[in-house]
Image 1: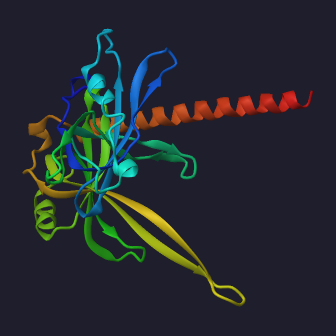
Image 2: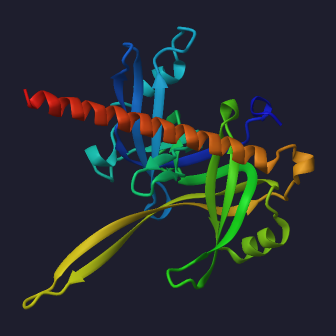
Image 3: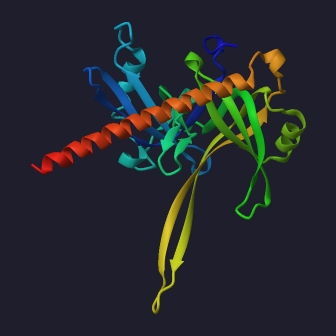
Length: 290
């Protein structure tokens, strides 16, 4: 199946909860066009705070007014827990959000690092007594299923499933989803194969873990430093029966080729930017000599 013929796959996220922070603002691009950009941080169950990236241009490509932009403008001054306190913070619902690719080139790792973020533009106020919601449905082709091991190499009864999801325009997102429920482990390991097309449901997880490190001194109390790590997961809670590649029409190698091409593009853009910055710095240094 050619890239332009690949059908966009299901990718839907629903988040509803307390608005903890709101950084949406109006910006102007280099051509003078207005757009909205920022994040909404929404707290769902178990104090899980999920950032949702928001973007909308004032005008469509046709020059017509964008109704999504007009709705989101009203959210700019919407209060949040940061501005009015958690007791008075309103609840919001974000529907038809998506898990989008946010991969980047890591200079430290010298490679493209696969990454994701939640994006959404359909935001509305929810009732104060509305229940929290945190769910995703995503379709894709399985590229690997592996058990997670700890630092000592021991089994953890936790598994990562890598999924390739076709987006708009034939782009392909690479996502890693986690499962540890015994029923899920049994079903997936007994029924899913690499190359199968599946739809997976679950929850977006953002967890913060604190770690304290003590540095012993020659005398006196040791110096204690606390680090906070944020763990982001797409946790699987349910899944459909698999559909083989002959029936689905999606070939794993074709999707992997698109991911490779996308990663090469990210690397090329990074290298081009680095070369430009180096040339600018060199020119600035030369000017200081005169």
